[in-house]
Image (tube, rainbow, N blue to C red; front, side, top):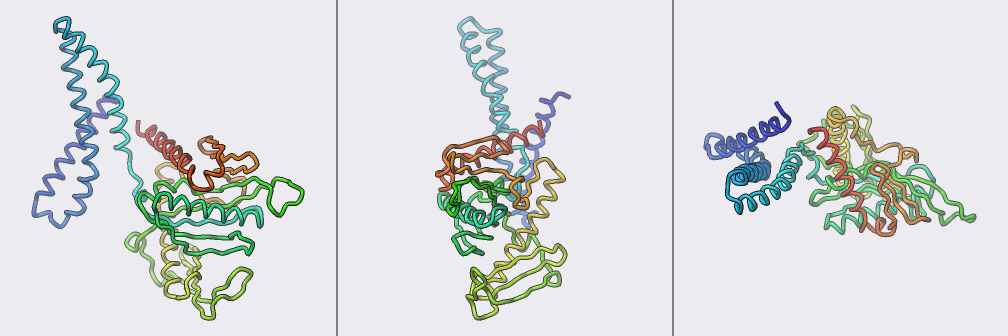
Amino acid sequence: MTALTQFDVKLDKVVRRHAELRDALADPARGGEFAKLSKEYSDLTPLVEAIEALKKARQERDDLTEIAREGDADMRGLADTEVKALDKRIPTLEQNIKLLLLPKDEADERNAILELRAGTGGEEAGLFAAELFRMYQRYAALHHWRFEVMEVSETGIGGVKEAIASISGRDVFHRLKFESGVHRVQRVPETEGSGRIHTSAATVAVLPEAEEVDIKIDDKDLRIDVFRSSGPGGQSVNTTDSAVRITHLPTGLVVQQQDEKSQHKNKAKALKVLRARLYERERQAKEAARAASRKSQVGTGDRSERIRTYNFPQGRVSDHRINLTLYKIDKVMSGEALDEFIEALLAEDQAARLAEVE
């Protein structure tokens, strides 16, 4: 069986499944499955429409090829021109179908939890982490997403040790998922008198937001500690024990929230982050089993694990995974040019996944 025939067999299965779903949706006895069946039918509809367009184009080409072979001279010329046009169009239709056939990351449509931590580099790393946090905040605003700051642990000089935000909107995780990793900065710190370029780093983690139905957390698996929240340098900013630290005993994951004055609100936020981290662990385990080469890791904050370098003296930003360098660091840091990296990363991922199925 040729590859094309295997491809056609797969397309026929899709069309048959779409017809089965249409019939099932019209069956009153299956009313309890309506939501599930309706979603699958809706997801398959664009693919079936693309398959029908391909079949129509192939049939036209076959008909015109026959005319070009047996018609009169004028008809043969016109038919031959049409056949050449269809020969160019059909591979594009086939490629579009292959893209639609790619398995979707079920997390792509979810909102996200953004976690940012200062890594190697002391105070300068904290300042860079704060700038990255603002970069994503501006990027979210450009996409009309909601950016809610959940937790910020400041260094006292304008930097952050750790910052967490919830980002909600259309395709948030889909667009941000490849931002996870170590981001390295090269520049002369404001505190550097000799003008020497320093290198420091910050880690970014983008986690798909999980609902309670996705991740069940048993109370017996949690240790919850409450304490008085504090500001930079340990100064007390609250006179009540409103800060919350949750330890998930089976995994050892620890989440802390203290931004709210209400202990209840801090606990709710901490559970939201914990669910996202647990969901991401499960998701990464599945992804690793399916394609270990594309498993993303947050890293430890060490500069050697970098995914992107921001070189301020040269005004350039380089993404080392796709060998893309942009000489527009100001526009990247303002969020305006970040899409150039994101679109290239999404295209690279799509190409890699296509290569696996072809």
